[in-house]
Length: 185
Image (cartoon, rainbow, N blue to C red; front, side, top):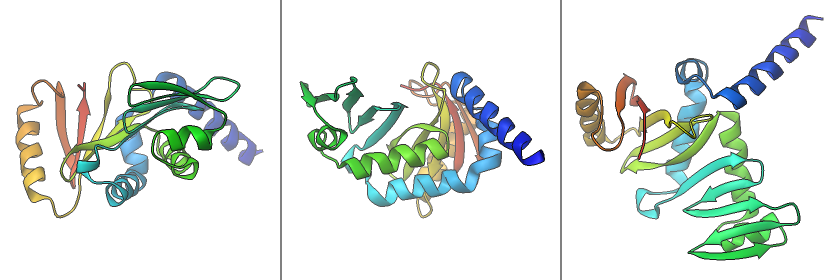
């Protein structure tokens, strides 16, 4: 009975956080190591010069490096480089955006596990993670990668002011290279 109750609570929590958004403080408290691993993996695969980004709008709806993939029930609609095309499969759609189906599914799965809506570089050495549910009013975390002292000092300076004008209307230092933000460009 106890195991079923736990499963039920997890399902209800998961449905609630998907519909209402995830509390950033609770997410950080419960999944900081997983968020760190996710951000570090992103930075290992991509560089700030790649202008890489991934957004998980929902099942079958993604943004990959500024290109959009949307399931249309019979295949996929792809907007890449300003061109609109149709693809018969996710593999074909991913190829049109310069990636593979496996890579797209890898980031989709990883983002879902840590409740990340979008990931990209904010600046050299800084990964931005927007939290699931923050689509309308963006919020999430900035993670300064180890070995980036200039970025850490710069963000701490902005956090002392409480914001970065024109970008984040709220910025707070959390700890160990982590910053929490609200509002986004």
